[in-house]
Amino acid sequence: MISAEEHFQNEFLRPILKEQNELLIAVFKNYLTKHKVLFERYSPEDQANYIENTIKKDAQLRNYFVGTIIGKLSTEQYHVFVTMETELNRRIITMLVKRLQSQMI
Image 1 (cartoon, one colour):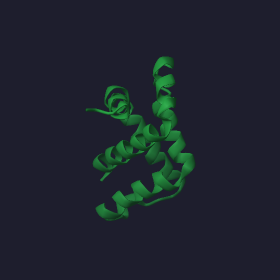
Image 2 (cartoon, rainbow, N blue to C red):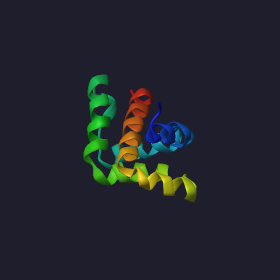
Image 3 (spheres, rainbow, N blue to C red):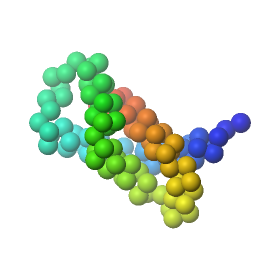
Image 4 (cartoon, helix red, strand yellow):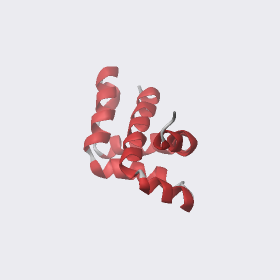
């Protein structure tokens, strides 16, 4: 049986992440530029770790990404989202990290 969180993730969040893909990459690249990170000089393993650690530790960046995703929800979808917000935020970040790692490394 599929959980309500997994259903919401697959039905709404994954398509939004896919739709916003180019923007999400641009936001992260802008972050790297602003913070003068020479990302291309890192090994692929270090790049993967940097993406994950930065998004998980930088609350402002993380919230920016989450806002970019939930801003695409309808009002009705948002009302459902807030009932499972903590778990869905965790899922958004997990999907985002994997997406950035697979495309930026």
